[in-house]
Length: 253
Image 1 (tube, rainbow, N blue to C red):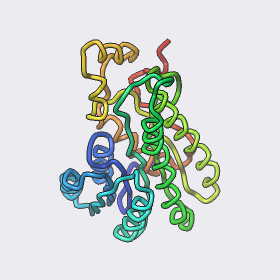
Image 2: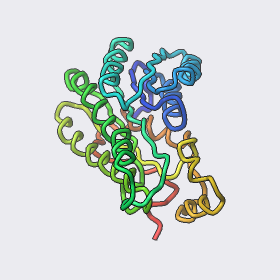
Image 3: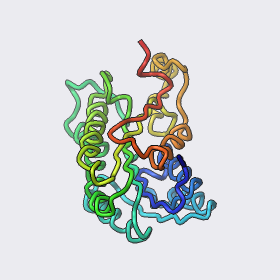
Image 4: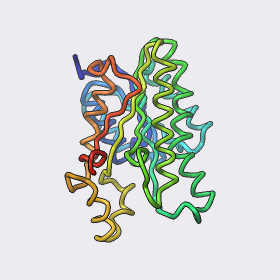
């Protein structure tokens, strides 16, 4: 089976930094053209340059996935600019605070679910008709180990990511007969600017890493090749599943 993505066309949300950036560049290295979606157009330009180094087309689409209408428009623009679509990576998301559920402000809860869950549904709903009509495609939803259990202080984020896993399984079932695969990539604690708030003190960081058997942060590039696997024909009989990349976190007692 081949990890080659030559001729494939991909959309990656949250592509300006961290995991999304690493995935977009890895896709280009494997031969794919990539539409890059994120809020920061200036940072996307740097990622676009990296994609172009591999001789692949990069389409820069500054997009705030909190704006559903703009997101749908960007998906349509990406399909038009790429001349089609084969791969969708829903990576945009994150969390910037920890707070007990009992006193969490509704606005914080709602924004977190909007960013991490609603945006995934919006992109899938916008891209789905095209993928279903052509009878092929790979959708990769970036979830989190937080969606697997209790995460004190992060009920908002954990609930959103658990829902992403459920959505992934449901879409996989609904779309399987049409030839469209839907899987999840589930990171553990990855060292990006989105997890900077967990490194504000040595004590907080030590608490996070204490539960990781490998006793270190994961790196964005360690998610990129698993994403290529899910996007490629190497995973052609795989749908409704998740690849967990967490340094052993979920198997720890």
